[in-house]
Image (cartoon, rainbow, N blue to C red; front, top):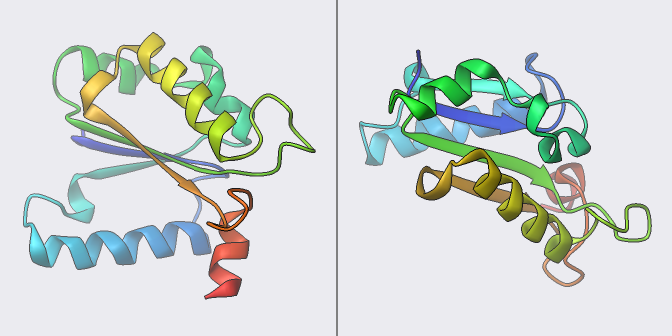
Amino acid sequence: MKSIWILHEGNAKKTHDNALISLLIEHLSQINPEISLGKVEFHGMGKKSSFFDLASYPKLLKDGVATDKVTKVLLVVDADYPETDVKYGGFENTQKELGEIIAELGFGLLCDTYITFDPATKTGYLESLILST
């Protein structure tokens, strides 16, 4: 079992999102050898709403956290827009709801989140970030 899990929107196929994250990990591994692609399990959660459903999280991940085999978890989601999703849309709503699900899962201090958004509006998608840069 890999000790670091990155759960992201979409699927686990070779996508541009995964390629971008992989490049970042390769760069980070030069700074910190404890971080390497060989230690990372990528898991596509499908649509954003899956992040807020306890049943969507893989049993393997939950078991790994419970037995200390998984030491780090990163959730990567888009902020989206509150106009299209009142509960989960926008940075603040996404951050609040992810915090609640992390607590429910018992992931606590080993879990972090990365929410992609436009800093001016605190809304948006990863694709928008990539296109704007």
